[in-house]
Length: 411
Ligand code: GLN
Image 1 (spheres, rainbow, N blue to C red):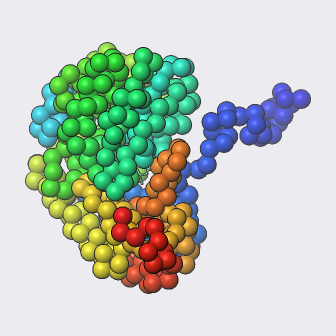
Image 2 (image 1 turned 60 degrees about the vertical axis):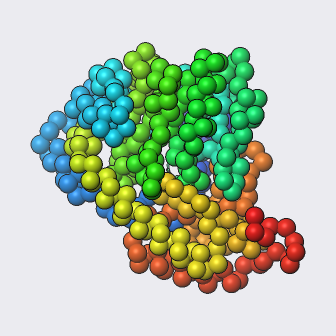
Image 3 (image 1 turned 180 degrees about the vertical axis):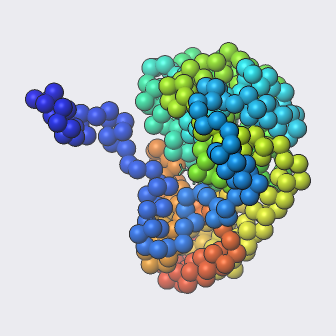
């Protein structure tokens, strides 16, 4: 029977599929973007800018598409791109890399994350994850047979409790996954937290996967890479993304930086995920990474202006915005804003009745979600932001406030 059903292309019931996927909802980013398409709302949900991206980088991709090879590039990436990545990190983060053995180009950071987890984690290995967590991490850890040990950053300051870190590390810990700067909070892990994580990784012989895709999108502070913390060079997988650096999120060009033995294993997982990444995009990213340092400052200045515009607009409309210093996102604290709705209800009503799509931050938790924060992407043009602010202000007046003297006032 089963063979016949398969041969006839009859879909298998979800019960016959891997339960990790069968029971998994569609990612919140796709869900909220679909809601924006359905309702015509302004999409401040999924993180992507509405600008077209740097013209010279796009033109380099177009030229390469027409004038260079479109056949398989080397499995770990075009040598020119791997050299450009190594040069880029030497200049911007004073990190020395051997481009030939320590850089693997992937189809976006999401593939880099998957390849790293698949290469490192065996069934039964414990993996320390920090909530709120980017939603691609946990399913892949589970699929690899890893046993998650969740610890949390607590709002409003999103600080990590070192005692919880100690409790999470043990003899079976194989990997810790962190994101710095942090999506969705827009905060950066302080040097003391990175040092504490490094100390435990070294003591327990643990590998760290550090998703640093927001490394260039920060305001008034330098990026601190776990890779550069003493003792971590040999045990850190650092992940980067051209989509974030050049605001070309659809390109899906990312990379893994790791010492040669680790990079070699990650490449073996990568070779059977995507094998390689479109060569014209690789050529263009290689060119883009070589831009003058001033280009990166200007890029940040442009985002800083949009960010300040959205924050000022939200505050002017009576919303409390949590402090942040990086990423394309800012967050509203609902109780501190005097709004007695959970994040999912707020996001749903704001999309359907208010015409603005946001992201409920509870989606970044696997257990005991924080339900009081929504995330907004400010990387939009001024007119779009102004219209979104006007809509958010109109809705603010309609949302129920907590009873006087009740919980959830200024948090
Ligand atoms: N990183 C993006 C965000 O946080 C989402 C990426 C995606 O949708 N795959 O909004």
